[in-house]
Image 1 (cartoon, rainbow, N blue to C red):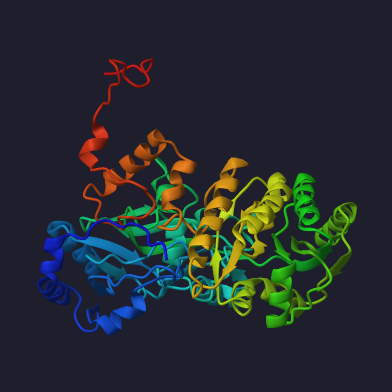
Image 2 (image 1 turned 90 degrees about the vertical axis):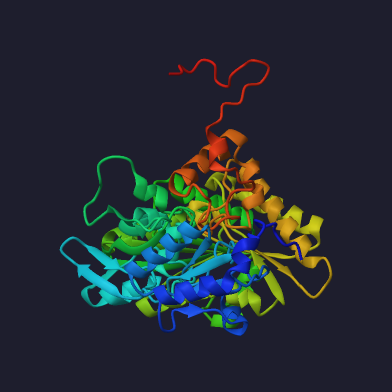
Length: 498
């Protein structure tokens, strides 16, 4: 197994472990501190289970005051902190460190307020994604971003990773649906960004925090936008003789100005796995399947269904079926949302990737992945948010066979490099974490990365929050302000300097 290189543990912190645990028990009494090896095993990994590490100690605070005091204590004593939500991260974003406090926010699990007048809900970060929708469903509202793990993933983790989901094509990612947060900085200061209003003056610090992967602060409250359920929602299953044809159909649908609630794509392997698992009624004689959902007024939905059927026919679709009831629509989506565990039934292990490409490049990238599959000798099942170009290839392997995990990782790296080469990015919704950290130079040059680290330094000058994630190389913050001159020539000589 290829273990990512992590920051060297601080020996002094390891030596003071007993003292640190005792001090933390004073801050978070009762069952809020977990320090035995067996009990900490439950926290040694997140959704990227190939990597495991026991933390120094696990702390489960229950109040903002406790979070503030824990962070202030760690800041004053030079102790690293790894924030964690539900632990569903697929990029290793919540992987513990040997010398770090694992700050678990699962006890922050209350819905604080529902304001239907302003169409917002105020929740604690440990509330599950689906829990928000359930809390407002009786009034016909819902929370739009819906990751496949929505039954388990927490809204705090969604903010950290800027999570997406099958309906984010039309309604946006987490960043488009979060209006405000309360967060605690590493020195214990509690700040509020945004609120119940549509926008805030000044710099968009809220946007910066969404997707910051726990490197800048710890979220303790989230204000989210809730939407009224559309009058009509119908899902279509559309089958194609090739993945390339399905990919071109997606590009043509968006190119025609149609923005469905969601467009998902599955290839033959994923279709069969999902159908065997859920029995959603998927066709088994096609190479690729699109699930297209249209929502809005009934007349508009009926018209758009006809337009999508026409575009699909022009791309060689061999079958089309439209849901005739809400139950059938939910069944269509149940197969897609269960695709990951379904693939887990046909392979001892799988590696779930996450990259995003321009939609028009779908056919090219699918062909490229087929070539990479042959190169690495491993099978790949494709399940992804086709509408916004967010790919989720599932690389099948057997960790018990020597070298297969390493081949799967290199296969995944090649897929991500391909995404960048065609004008895409390394991640869409899973985050960078440790999984894609060392690939960051494939997308960003040194100046880009240095500028991102300067932002990190502004919030956390000692690099105590979630170190070892996102950046392939860390610099001391003092180094970032130095001017580097090569052969007497300053960088960017045309820029005025004061």
